[in-house]
Amino acid sequence: MGPSQRAAWLEELSGERGDGRVDVVVIGGGVTGAGCALDLALRGLSVALLEQRDLASGTSSRSSKLIHGGLRYLQRLEFGLVKESLTERRLLLGRLAPHLVHSVQFLYPIRRGWRERLRTGLGIALYSLMAGGGRHAHGSHRHLGARGTHQLAPGLDAGVVRGGITYWDGQTDDARLVVAIARTAAAHGARILTSTRVQELIVTDGAVRGVIAHCGETGRTFKLDADAVINATGVWTSQIEQLAERGADAPDLERTRIRASKGIHLLVPKDRIDLHCGLIVPTPPSVLFVVPWGERWIIGTTDSDWDLDYAHPAASSADIELLLQRVNSVLADPISREDICGVYAGLRPLVAGDDPSVSEQSAKLSREHAIARVVPGLVSVAGGKYTTYRVMAADTVELALGEVEVARGRKAPKLPRRRRDAAARRTATLVTPLVGAAGYEERRRRHDEIGARVGLSRATVAHLLDRHGDQIDEVIDLVAACPDLGEPLASGHSYLRAEVTHAVRSEAALHLDDVLTRRTRLSVESWDRGVDIAQDTAELMGAELGWSPETIEREVWHYQARVEAERDSQTRPDDQTADAARLGAPDIRR
Image (cartoon, rainbow, N blue to C red; front, top):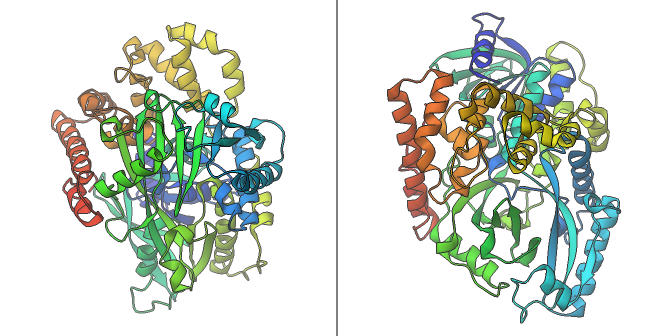
């Protein structure tokens, strides 16, 4: 997915060197949209995915980085959702993305005595049973007394924590997983265009039959005809649906009700919290996670309604203080703001039901996904969990295929009420490894050989394998051709300069922010938020993208302005002032 391939796709889809038509247009480049594009491509349909910013630039890069069944959903008796999530977790760990999804141990601390241990123990035992039992990846668990808990988690306050229960779940770099899904879709024929905003829906005889889109990189506006359009835009779902209202023959809409819920996360150095595993603590109305992340901990999350800017949700000072208060309630050595090296905020697109009392409490909304035929030719998917993206895509594609049949003059197949299990089993995404997965284990066995070829350490090769899988060869080839690319991108971090070049050539990175925020995580992992290496990174990208010195300067300025605005927003007392501060930095994409 490099710049030349993007240019070719744009020519095909705009009608310059193609017919400007596909079977299905997918709007939205998050995990669900990428999953839909892959599912459609594997079924042999022509598909275009259009994303107004970058892959995973919204919710799909701002999660807790977990691939999990959702232990707390057992408390709500959402057994189907938990079972479904655990099934998908097992697939990702074993077949689909073993290079990107890994097992991680968690401790559930017991603070209130035997009743809590009995209730929680039964829940975690059920969770393990539903996962299939057995080894770590399948959910084994263990009860610990006070001594065992202290050995595993010395940093917990012994006066508060009386024991604990351990279990295992999955973890991933969410943005890289989306890139892998998109690359797999592209390998099977999907066209992926980021920096491309849908401005209008083409409505013909009351049905949506394509889009009018604008490419922010070239300034080109083009018409793209299709038999059906999938709206996988998360919190932007309603905005896309409203486009169908325009025009003389606009149909009545079957609206999808979405509530945006903001969750923030903090990153602190590993040595500030003395734990040998992850941590999960119920802190109503949400759940507190402390998740191992390389040399750092991710602490999250909050759960509050958000009705301000969707593109750049801001973490306020109040959000940060709330999260610090929650995590410090169980720590022997409290952490402070001075310990925080990174902060990020994301929006969950929760499906609001018809009960207004529930819709006002985002933490109580179900994580079940909703799929609707909004109007003929337009299918919306919203809600759900990151872990079940493949199932969500399968359900959505099943409904979209009916719209394609109608557009072609055939009768739409009647879909059963509960399509989910059948649809998820029927699609080829069940057995198709994502890019990087197929040769991952073989590359791991050749670990030392790979590093010796270009003089990279075992730790660096392990880092590359867990980010690129069998695509490590592409990165190693870059280092072999130019040894300077084998140097670290930033001091104290494992990212290589070669990964910047690779991000541009193969991973659709078009702007400095794409690399520092999503292809790497330096924007939240480093104390300077990536500002110190912004110039070097921009020059590496510029060599691939043909940037002038003025363009490089503009990219660096935009990134620095973004970091400054985010830091400013995190000192503001509430959502309104934090949002205003964050919007002080202009968007690099037109």
